[in-house]
Image 1 (spheres, rainbow, N blue to C red):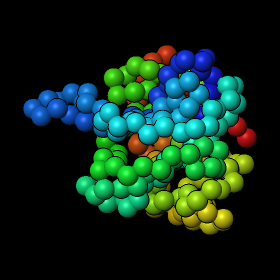
Image 2 (image 1 turned 30 degrees about the vertical axis):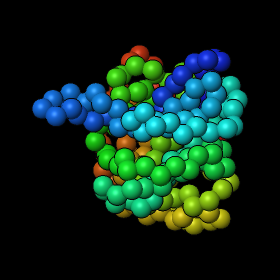
Image 3 (image 1 turned 180 degrees about the vertical axis):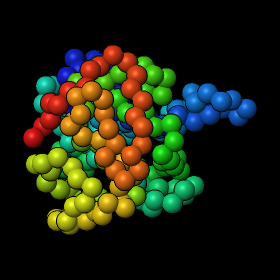
Image 4 (image 1 turned 90 degrees about the vertical axis):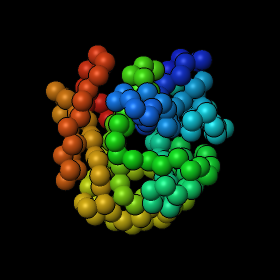
Length: 193
């Protein structure tokens, strides 16, 4: 992500909303990953662990979120890495599901990111197991293991979106999910590589 937010601004990278009982509208925030005043944070229904490193403006930053164990309905340890360095560790009972996921905005379709996003990948397994060297090339469906980075096969990847299509974002995983664009931000081929 390239952070172009001004001081004091809040911008959401990813959000997962939940439904109220009897409702068909997803409005209750389950969790969301965001940056406020240059500091990365994650909110779990009001519980808000925060990082300590201030992200630089107008610079590409690599953000990774991992969750272990990966089972549904279990208490999990979440780790957030900023530019390859562990920034936040927290244990929560909130789960991550592939439904109603929003990228670049919060659960209410507001708080749109002020900057650029590139190379989004969601996998079934934990990729980063400790501090790591940030990738210097676009993410792929498969990868070899290296220091604190686990290997991936195409079947491990649930979602992969790169900045290769200027008309609209595309899921390049074997799932080929349809991506619904909201807001007015135009797609771009700008990448950190």
